Image (cartoon, rainbow, N blue to C red; front, side, top):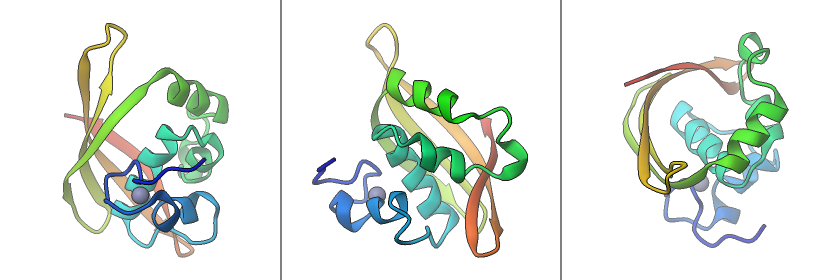
Length: 126
Ligand SMILES: [Zn+2]
């Protein structure tokens, strides 16, 4: 897929931003980078990446198929990172709901660094 602006909102080309993580050429160096790359993976419907960056303890409830249908059934519009620290990222992700109105997912997510790779653990809706 050729995208000029990376869906994560960094302002960089996709090829110079989250794509290298999606292609496993690089690993997201921070929790925020991982969160941004996961948002971008929802936009490009990369279910493998979403599954593999979900912490092992949480994969049961988040199958590849579930990620794929979620990604395909949601029209994501924009990501705003509100706050990020070492292992917590608070963000707003805007999307079109089933009535074609703009809606927002406001979440505070927890991440874990394991063997040099960041993983999404879980999150609270705000
Ligand atoms: Zn990006």
